[in-house]
Image 1 (cartoon, rainbow, N blue to C red):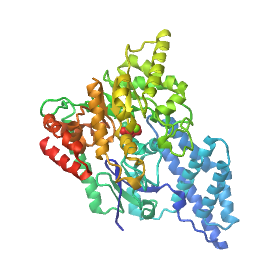
Image 2: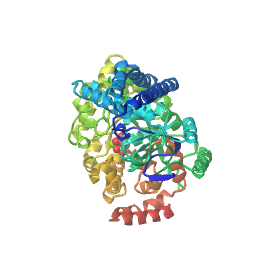
Image 3: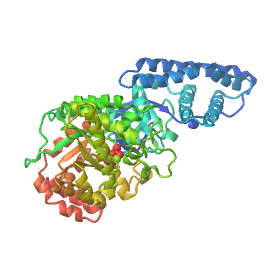
Image 4: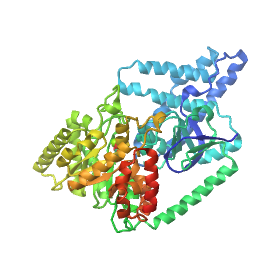
Length: 578
Ligand code: PEP
Ligand code: MG
């Protein structure tokens, strides 16, 4: 029966595939004990499900390619080894034969036993292996419970899988995309979470806060994600599939129309040049940024280099990544942000603190880096060494005080001196910038600005910290409002103070890539935008229709508007003015 569930649009596009539920506790567990004559059948069902799971992993292993091959292969191999482990499987067969449990219950009991052992271990790495057990058990459970129609299964088999889960950590997304997962549906989460940002970077359609997803979607159901409408269609009809094909055709046409803008200038009707920089996380983003005429990279989130791994990347490894980034941008400026671990970005190597009561207000970004001076120095040295290959700039996240910038500047200068003394070639001047994403930094900007060469406004966090609304909490999505008068005042103030001091200021939060905010931001004085490259052509198209002088006239009225409704009203006038 066709069913439509709605949610937040975290990553664009549509995807058609078979649902893969990733929440073992949600699987139907048959608690009744078996009769003697049922035991043979149940053993057979589990044998088949294990064989199917092994076969899936074998096929997956063959499909792995690309940048993360080694890491993903390790992940798949670990799962295959678990399924090949007789102790692991015999335990389940004993539970069926001797304990008379159904296969689903035996699987769950085996999971709980193993997880209990893992949880009692001191080693955090071993403890984290609990997730692997869950993934393996979920795969076998899914194979036990396949009961969709033959047609659906055939179609789905061709179209891959869509992960349906409660949450997904940013660190899990790359392996998922590399595993051939076509899209993600989450029952919680928000559109400005780091998971959502990464999904966009991976071009992986994703819906968040689809509250009923786990209740209504069954494993193996055919589902259609509509990232444009914010819908997931369960058991899509022929009409839905036709809509999907139309979308595919329209997307190609839109790409063709926008492709005409690839080499075009980004300039308002009254001739003001607007710079569009790219937020880049992956080599695919770099390629797209170049292809779409980015002015440079406005934000490179280095923590994504750290999320996939058990050990920290050393200076050399980081240097190679930053060098390739600089080379990839062919002489255009590249803004490398120092590590912004903490809050919702925790790594497997244990740098980010564990167990903080309030991690978003905790040891995050520059606070963490300054507590780990060696780690920070190795990152700064790697960035400095990359400066020999193209213009790179250093951007510091989560700045609250001017002293933090002084500390980073001192460290940067020390690293420069050491590198020069050891004969390394580095650029003569490396610009250092602060992210303005904490209200305190926006308000104290007149003093901070003297210590920096440029600033970048991180509205994703600025909205969260100004409004005291967790950016990842879908219960508060209606309060997470970039148009709140307080947020607009802080943005306008930051732009004005920076310009007055002769510093460049860009905006690199998700707002920058939303064409509905382009006129507003230009009205507030912004000339440098940084966004996911996939959004650049749309924003360029919008900029080219606007008149900056006419928009600037409305800035004061916009900033005086006391409510969201009045701001919306003023915005509507902006569109006609622009
Ligand atoms: C921001 O906060 O707006 C930003 C760009 O940083 P991140 O999303 O990585 O926190
Ligand atoms: Mg931020």
